[in-house]
Length: 356
Image (cartoon, rainbow, N blue to C red):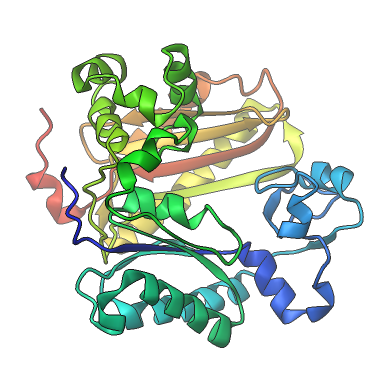
């Protein structure tokens, strides 16, 4: 087993974070369905719904208009990102009291490695309980915590008893826990891979465990090694205190659906110019360009191109034109379009990168 039983990982996940901040700052919202995101008569989407709203089937990324049909008496609130960032900073400061090794995943969740912690005699469970209490007392919000011997299981554990939960998966319990886990709940297994696995008869972890590593690699490429490890309850990834920025992106949702291909191309060029300016300011270069197109019926596609040399504006614009031509934009109405640059490296690292 690659995971040492000595590893003690905590995953902290704030409960319905944006909505919880709104309820905290406006007590009159308590007990009501709260939806943070677009207005019900707009083309926006749900950013977060509180647990009262989720009882009506409302979830993140749902069109706000659909959320309104499901729960017309919900309170729809425009996001206040400054308030959410401020609350997130308070939470992250609390986490750093208990470990120097904190890896934020987003504004409302993070991993901590407390293997070397001395607080509470090194008990990860007691540390997690103390963190939750500090967040309630100081930030007036609740968080759920997962405690385990690796990141995969800690993150799963934090979602098991929301809201305000605390779940522990001990080293001797990990393999048995994974055996009963639905394959769609495995980290890194998306909808397409889940469907492919189910066609192969892989529905839960026990099914995955019956497959040899070589057979998984034959069907899923290099990802097969990862799936074989997860099937045994193993995840060797360390908690990284300083995560490198993997990408820069821009996107826009149009007020009205767009079918004019020239307008879409010009919008992508505008977004690209902003991203290239950010790259230059930070001394970075990008090798991969991705465009995202969401059609009026909410079907979404991405198209990517990875270059052997760092992208410049001319090369990137040429790629945008070719990638856009590989979508149905123009033939189908488009509601959202975006650009992402990835494969980032510092400018002085170019000579160190080998393209074989």
